[in-house]
Image (cartoon, rainbow, N blue to C red; front, side, top):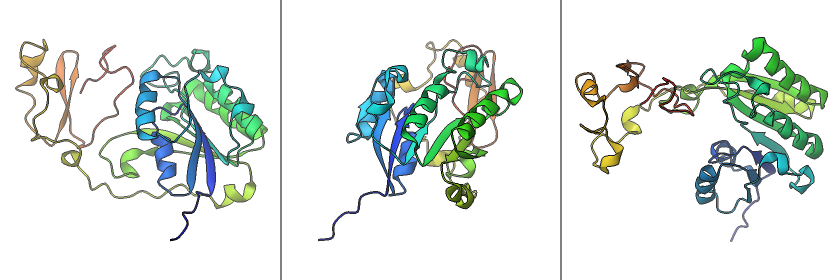
Length: 261
């Protein structure tokens, strides 16, 4: 019986959420997640169910000491993006959530991983006239890393019918790694909403808009006419999303006038 081969690289993950970024790395078969940190209790429930063998730390990152972490080849994190998002207040580093990059930097300085991987909203690039992103890049460079970055849309790379533009920053400790790394090439989008949404099954009533339950129900009925289209309630009217892909769902769904599916 052949022995199983251990993954070649070890990773530590911060702001792990439900584990989406880590899942991509693990699917290569070459990366093992040795440690994950996530403060949100509901996200941790999902993470733990999907990743029962990954040590999950629920503390605020401010409380985590870098020397407590396992050594790693890769350190990754999608630090909370509301501080830099077009849907938020754009306070950036002045936001209580905006300093979290520097907490991750504290870990990077101590553990010196071979690769640092950061994901965030595309507006990080233009926030504060580009100064926020400049600070992040310069901080990595000053700590001896070579930096590449690119804004990519999930629908162009994962064959998933969702419009999701994000910036990906990859920083390398070694110049040779930097020189040989290339971002992935786009793949055709062949999946449709019908591959994701079960239009024909029957589920609990709580998942449906119902007459008498939502005050805007009567405005939905005449507008929603196609199962090839997603619709959004925009305060006073229904908007048809004709791109045949789902828009990004925002963190503050349904508040402040933002789109409601």
